[in-house]
Length: 295
Image 1 (cartoon, one colour):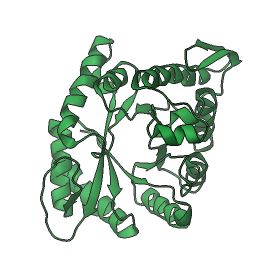
Image 2: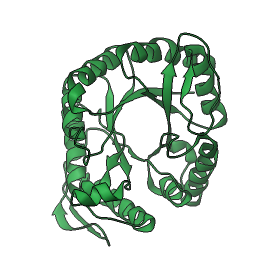
Image 3: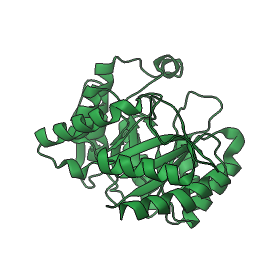
């Protein structure tokens, strides 16, 4: 079983130096992924894509992705151009996770739209088509949508590698769309989608993939887990939106169960206190223990 491991960090303006240092540790110590939140309407946070560009420039192996992109505040044609550029500059180390939208009053306050759930899903589908069209060089991209359209725009450049488009979907309709057209599912943290609903979401995604003539195995399944890696053992359980607070061995048992029984292949840690101690415990203790148990 091939597993990938990452960490998520919030792009706080007061912690930019620490974030960059943690990214360098993650890179040098062999972590696979770094996710950076995207909430442009928050005055305490810097622009996610500018920070991603900086992190990519300062690392060599780490893949970086917005976790997840606030689509209503980022036009898809330009988003496709940005994604391809970041991927080219980094030698193929950028991935793109998309969110249909949340916190609509804040989005509207920043000049963005206010959409119903159905409208947000329709916009996400149109945006995905436009982004992929923008990655086909030497062509004219034309997509006539209700929320997003491009009319014969010169597409390109192509990314350095096939950039994955991962949806941070929550409800059944959104998960069905994920199974139908996305390259992966970045499962929302349990605050938005409790652990008990993860298996049902996985089943919906897989069924929709089959209905669309796709192999469910081709869709990345990312579990995002909030908690603390403690010195002493704690409860080894997933319940509601409770943070996970146990030692490295307990964390590994949880991840193995999610991989074997729930079908996740990628794990992104959201530390309650993001610091180098938690990062090193994740990389040095939890990751190798999980890999050994899954071998």
